[in-house]
Length: 202
Image (cartoon, rainbow, N blue to C red; front, side, top):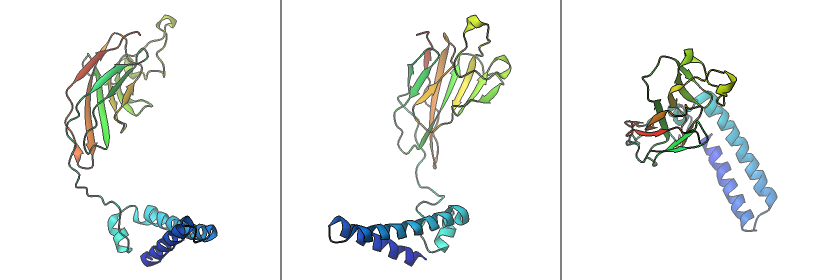
């Protein structure tokens, strides 16, 4: 099976080079491409449905896995250069200097009060702790004049992989403290030094 795939790949490369150098026809190149794509689609079903990405099964089938489960990548170091900027009222955006070997970043944002027990997950992939019996805040802060209760977020844990994070529905007048960490297959870094900023009205 591997030999057949290698032959299709070699044929595609030859036909593509010939077409690119104007010594072969576009039709031959497209036929070679279609044959190679058909083979790749067949292999994709095998890897996804049978091998499930297991490198041992892929090797037994006569192929070479592109990435195994083990990784020699060192764990990332502590994040540095953490910054916080104010956006629209009730919004803070955080960032840090890129960390060598990191493939994802997490953030804990904590208000200046002890952690309560009400923990929920919001639609931005962030675990949050709120007052008021665990009420989940609306997409935008309600108008206090309308009589709607506005829960105060005490903790947000951002679980997205991006380095740059945006936090919404924060309490105006509250100071928030930010801790970064970075992760990869080799491990998780220590928390960064804390950085803080007060949310202002605008």
